[in-house]
Length: 199
Ligand SMILES: [Zn+2]
Ligand SMILES: [Zn+2]
Image (cartoon, rainbow, N blue to C red; front, side):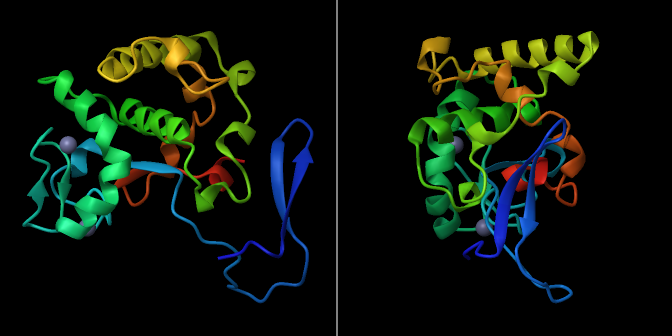
């Protein structure tokens, strides 16, 4: 769907904003896109399809990592691009499993490396997102540093050092771009990153 009636604008001290350029009808849908990246939360793992997020009691397991589950072949095929590299990482750290935010950060890294066109970037790209480092307390920064270390270990099977990361991103910054989004759990099923939701 084309975000035709929307315009981006900078909001000093608050980041970026979106405004509509014409009168709106109540309830009018302006833009719809899949999140840039999302993961099923640990609590829901195995109970919902990793692609379409529908509940299903008869999910098929990824034969490689044995973690990702899908309602059928078509969902598994559609999800493969987003799962291919994390699949190796999930397998490599067994029996450990990454925290949801680390698994999501991994998906973001792989998606940025693929440079694939994503409809959710039509309004804001991932690099447009402001880093929130300055607003973080020392305690929060320490928590994110810990997550960054966990991410580094988790991605080891695919990314050996920071030089292989997407340009202008490091293991720590990736978290500062969407920190606080944990409140945006989608009905508690998945953790998404959608640029417009974090403006
Ligand atoms: Zn499905
Ligand atoms: Zn897998």
